[in-house]
Image (cartoon, rainbow, N blue to C red; front, side):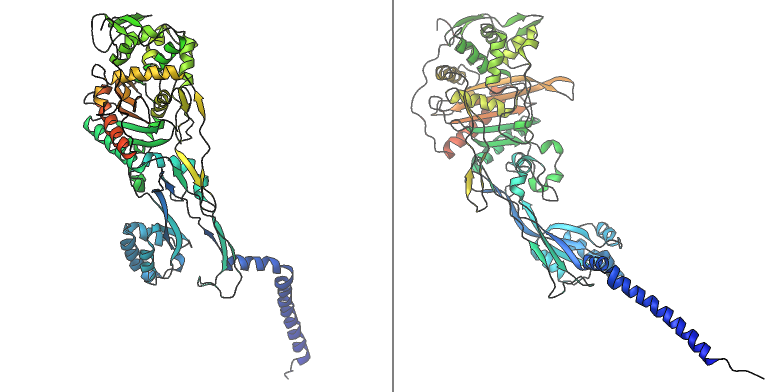
Length: 576
């Protein structure tokens, strides 16, 4: 006989099970809405709230007249969300993006295959119109956001001086690096709430901190003179098969650099495609032995001491025993009775040594230091070297002689240019300046602080040296190729053996010419240096023509007329 189960038992068991399940739900509900509510809310907000950096617009770099040398324009970044891309359209998207962005198809396909990533920048510096066309295809998982692109309108113009920025927009070289904090500004931040489809949720909270744009930097550079200097040095480097060269033009009275050109040049917009050796600023980073251009400092020490005057006569042979070395002039000649002016005009090494022996080693060293050797120029340019000036106590017997005519020490082009600016400015050195000022938050130009002025030699000594340098550009001087019709030019050639680390010794030459004009009322100073020329190597043949071309252009550009005076007749040899 079958018995029916007790329905009350089954009901009770069912109620117990239901109560247990409901208690689990209730406990979980208490956990979610009570104990863990704040944690879960934070996680949900983290998923919904999308932080975004608002890039600041980088300031411009301009020449003295406000012409833009480096400028920032609006651009777009194209990015990918591979996880959100339809696998069936991946090949079409890769082909389209590769064609539109001029990127290798394999590269784009590889980025699309990273399906575990949600954000991959594909291309920056995209033109806004092209980005709009790409977004017009409606590809899910392909996005665009505003950014900025750095452009250099002159391409190669002042490239080594200005420098360049990296992919993140930060300065990597040149003025872009040394003035990065001023130019960069401060990025802003923005936070918005988005849904699962990546679209902004309407009527939700958002926060925004606006970016602060960078400030502009105005240079002392004259764009036209800079262009002329770059053309002239590039032509000569190419014509002489040289390894490189530099040109500097300065305003004698203010110390402002009007041009700082280097060769070879590189396109700053495509700096990644250029060799590393071409990206620097040779005018401040390349050190070399100055050779005969250095003789003006020896002359200044000798004349300032009162032991020598421009008319002092020396019996100058073509060779001279100095300690353990036999030193010689550039060309053999019988003993000559040369005035100190004649020694400078003919660029006699032996005559310069004889004059240097009239002063002590310490006095000569102190004069080098006063002119700025052995330390940076004070320009503040990135990558500037200090050169090499050994302490006078360490000079060997022969080094004491060779230093007098510019061998055994090393300088930069800017250091040597500063020496001649000092002489042209009546013996007062003005710290070279390249930045005229920066703009404030309202866009108004704030001039840079006035450069330091230091008297190095007396005005009388400076005038005497200027006349000696004028004789060096005369018919009997080594710098005749630097003469400019109608103008009085003072200057000096330099031809020095060149130390090369690659060959482990002296290999080739450095050819230099540096001078100023008008000689009797100086306004502009120009230096031209050519490194390791293969066709010719004398400063008067290789560098002087560059000086002439650049200075002629600069005089016309600045509308500087001749003084109308004639140079006094210089006595180069005794009895003549």
